[in-house]
Image (cartoon, rainbow, N blue to C red):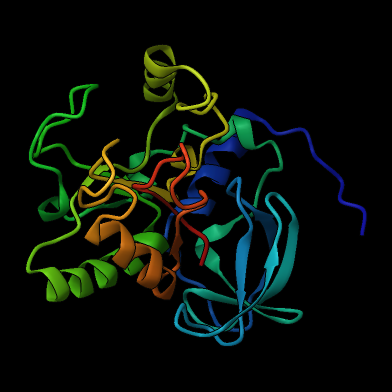
Length: 241
């Protein structure tokens, strides 16, 4: 199928930002057309639930067309995709990435915040934001994590506006920091749990929290994209539905 890429005005970009983030009411049976928003593949599930079996994937930025079956899931050929990973207005992702209004996102429970400063003015009281569909699943993940360990899986970073992305890129450079306009953080579908570069710490490779998230995170739609034990970020998880 050929997809015509339209010229997008600034007003249209604002609509695109809202479309990818907010839990918007829609009736079952509504047709949904869009593109996989993140830089990773989205899961296709056998049923409309993150606990259902993964039966396939749709590649990053690939076109998706289907029918809404409930508030969170789209029926597509071969299975179901979570609505939160679909951007439905623009294929010009860099014009949207990092430019989402927080009014279209959902606030992350502050009880999940890391206790200290992580740079760029973050404190334990800083409000973090996330794609609303991802945030729904995060709440369930955190409840399960607390049941297992007696405390929440503490979070450093979630959505990052483009100005913040530029800051981190100046501080760390590539490849540790993604080029501004390309990160899943800019689409509000990524989480950095409490960051560590030390093997064996809670969210470091081999740590109890990292092991639990790698085994169980997929049941809530969150996956770590890096090979175990590599230089990739052990604490970074993308929402892929």
